Amino acid sequence: MSLSRVVITPEVFLTCITHALSTEAEEVMGLLLGDIRGEEGSLVAHIRRAVPQIRTDRRKDRVETSPEQMAACSALAEHVSSSTGLPTRVVGWYHSHPHITVLPSHVDVNTQAMYQMLDEGFIGLIFSVFNSAPSKEQTIQVTAFQSLPGGDAAAAAGLLQGVSSDDLAGLDLQTQEALRASAAEHMQEASGASWHRKEVPLAVLQDGSNPSTLSDYVEVQKMLLAEEQAAHQQHKASSSNHNSSSVHEALLQLHDSAMHQQALLQHAECVLAPAVAAMRALSLQADVQEQQLQEDNKRLQELLDAQLAAAAAAAAAAAADICTDSDAGNGAASAPLIDLAGETTTEVPASLRTNDQAQPAS
Ligand SMILES: [Zn+2]
Image (cartoon, rainbow, N blue to C red; front, side, top):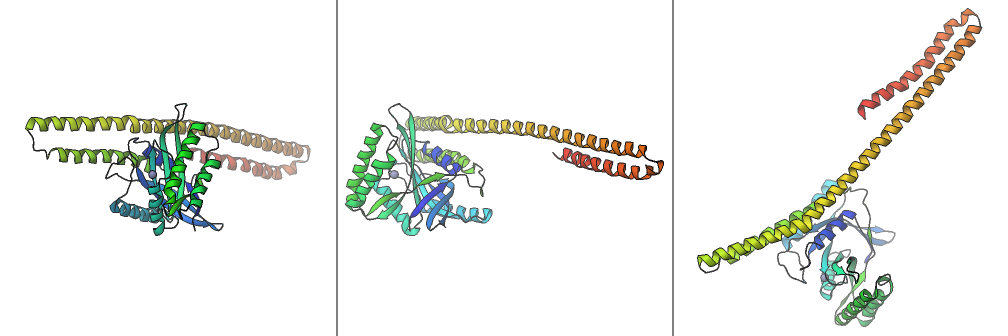
């Protein structure tokens, strides 16, 4: 049975988008952790974590993960299961399409089919980034897909039909044409293939059982830095193997470190600085919320005090009434008067006392 829906958390969305926007020269990828549940007779994938993968090989249009990274990810999933009590495993993968359509390529559909052979609920996400609309505005598109067997003409036609109806609503003419051309290309490819893509509805929803900690978002930043360092070390090792003069080698080293410095500065400017700015904005927002809550708290406290004072005044008035009534009667009524006054006055200080006790705690 194929998936009927996929639900990701806002943090997973943020992590994937940040990773996808880190480079427009090559594709990046990562694995998705969560679980697949049967809901009302259909399968729904719930994704709670995104784990970016270090690229061992930087190529423009290919992404792959190593068996080591896959194993590390499975170990992390087990750790998450035991620490949160939520069943967690590797349930999908994501990759970026910089400057190209969000639709999966022929290779993507085949890779997805291979993953589904191991786990039928496996899901693929694609983030299309760095695509500018005619207005020069950047657009980001996301799709979730699975592969279904059968690459016959009917399936391929269905692919084109799927694109021309719902997907194109609300897009400008140029983008529509580009998508149609891409779908036509896919149709040609699919006619010789044995798999075709099936789009899965995607929703971004907060998961109440697993509060957001932004840990994956921070992990992307660390991973990008580690990737850059590894690439530099690799480059340094290969260039020092040169059988050349010491001057040549010194120049090469100078060049390498300048390139490395440039890459780090770019990372700081394009990735870290916006992340820090976003965190500061979140922190400011939290401060404003805290201030509002404190004001609300103060207002409610004043209201409570006023009501308690009114209750005390009413009680005192009632006691005074009784007192006047008893005064009007004979002197023998003086004993019950003390009892009554005692009863009413103990009631008010009791509430005031709870109030006093609550105050230092807040
Ligand atoms: Zn792709």
